[in-house]
Length: 253
Image: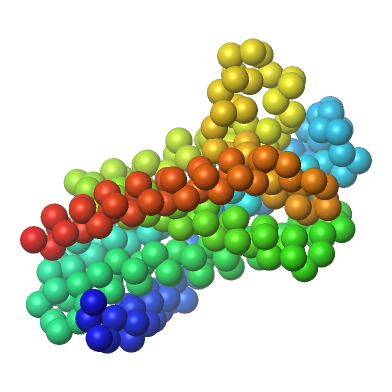
């Protein structure tokens, strides 16, 4: 490892964050759709949906946060693709800096920008009536799960950004990820779904993550959902990381 590894990463993080701060509209764009969905489901469909909770926004919020993150990581793929297309990766590799610093800079930028989006959405949810009885430890657990989920999807985004042949190809991968919460317990209990759809919904990553966050925020027992959620997040993270590093080395070769 380069002896200046962490300082190199901080420089690359600063570079990527400057791009974000110069175009804050990307963060607001990521927030607009999830917030619009939250408003629509709560105020239009909420009265007709039997969620088992008195306050539907409390039921809905975890899924909305995952949709926002799935939407936000597409910008990581986009920015990585631009760096590859413009020869920035090769240019940095010709300089005396850690070879992986650029990649980590994009990943950490994704964490920061998605954290900002999550906070903004929670603030809107509070205005809409969201309330939580969770303590500090439960909120920290929620934050930890969201960080793991963001990291896992960000490494998937890195694969797309480094492997894509066009700008559209770099970001289109995120659409199935954004759609996945709709076939989960994010909006309605899985018990209301047809058997085949229910079987898929109950055995895909989003449901266990949503159920864990929902239980933590409402101070309910999390059961086995938290272990399933962590297994999904860590499994996706590790596999995606390995493939992303391979794609990065191939790009820089």
